[in-house]
Amino acid sequence: MIFINNNYLRRPSLLQIVIGFLMLFVFLYVGFYITKWILYGLAFLSPLLIVAAALLNFQTIRNFFRYLWGLFRVKPLWGIVVALIMLVGFPVTAALLFVRAWSQYRKRKNYETYMTSDGSEYIDYEVVDERRTRIRRLDIFEGGE
Image (cartoon, rainbow, N blue to C red):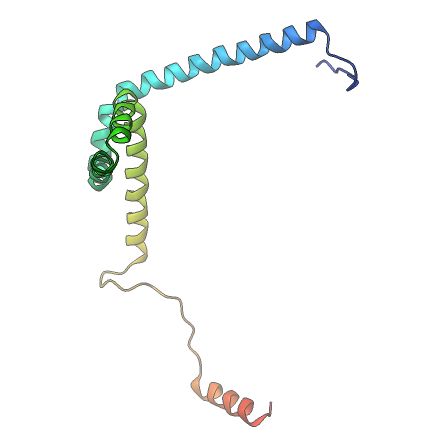
């Protein structure tokens, strides 16, 4: 590890600047390759993701296209731009629709586990002795303890 005791009034040397730019380019180069491979993987998986999203929660896909149609009607230029971005970035769109459908599916399943078969919720309760409660209310009203 290199420790540079650089005073704020002293400029960094040319070597430090060059090393900094080289590190920046190395990180950008590696980052672009990682992004490229993720997008290649999504491109191959996108049809499966759309089918899985439709099976998990078809309302997600339907609502997305309703949103696009509403955008076309209200702001046609913006609707065309969003539709073009959706088509060019179809793998990312498919992944986002799948994640949204999966989260809504999990939310629905978790809700169903907390509900009983007759539609009421399980509520934890404690049995309270009514006689003691009445006595306490009378004591409060009378000013006693």
